[in-house]
Image (cartoon, rainbow, N blue to C red):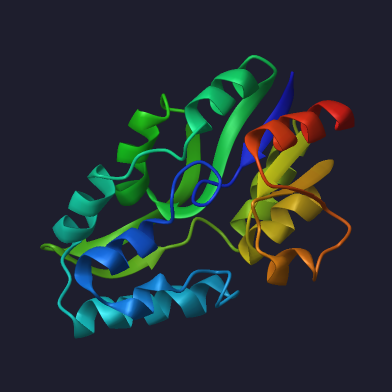
Length: 198
């Protein structure tokens, strides 16, 4: 079977940090890699806001517990699992992502880890440099054909490295910079794009 690598936030579930921003009333947490493309810059910005506003890990996790998959995501994953080995390749953290995996039926999740003291996030451990590209490279080294879908700047390396890369519900400021990737706006369109590329 081929492998389908999917981004998590914006593809299968809403943006976690946007939900936290709504809960805490800190508008700066609305920024994502769509706004700050370099992930480390974005995370340092977020950590600064967490310290400034004294936001605890438990507060974030409580908000994550209330997040539900995007409409149609569970059905799309069921469809995909019949046809691919499905791997979620995300820049989230296991401390955030695992409750969401439960709602998605526990697909494989490749992501990062937080550094926590007490109930405060003090840092994070990136699994490796350019982890989305490296994840696809590792799977390709096992002689899999890789399909990939994502919605943001931090997914581009994954889409570039995959045999077939597709944007899903990505904003125009992202897709306009990478016109070589097919763009889809719904799970039905994504299914069609995947099948037509098989």
